[in-house]
Length: 253
Image 1 (cartoon, rainbow, N blue to C red):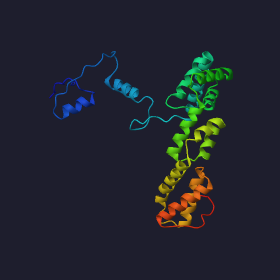
Image 2: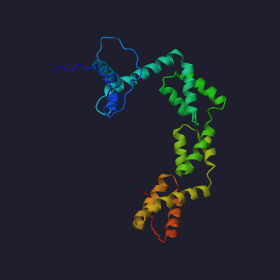
Image 3: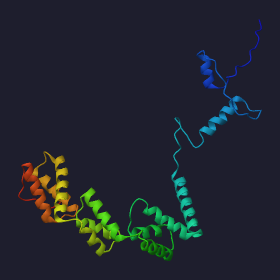
């Protein structure tokens, strides 16, 4: 007995519509763009999968990890493009570099000069732009130093000696540094040192008092506090906690 061959349903080849038909729902065929004739459903599905997975490999749609050579080639291309841009209009590029660097935070003149040098901006042009930015107040090492000291002393508990070293590395001159450090008085130093000790001491419960004492003293020394203040603050903290050590020993970690 020969049965009449039924035409294929409209959802044939579409997995999502096929599942709907299998569970008893009437699949609706969404409008699709017209495709050139001559390609089978399987071929079209293969091409679509290839397009979706282009640039990926492995199961789960993970992106393919670029090789070291590919990363180096990309970096080289970016560097060459940046160099070409500088050569085409060096002043516009240098000005944008400075404005981007100053967006959101102050920077010292030396920091900005170093950034321009790394971008291969000509020395003479860099100096002219830095002078111009200084004249209009966009670069101000004295203001930068004051902001740096206030922020680093409050957030990191750094003492004047450590702050002076940081500002020196950033190219701030001695006069601007000294003026900025005047913000920190003796009482401020002592309060900051005691806060550091109290915070660290909470994690040292159960340690031998001599060991805890040396570590606390070493912590303050690395933050730039003078020895006299270190010994005084650590002894005070130990006395308040019920422990006291006569000899603090060397200032180490």
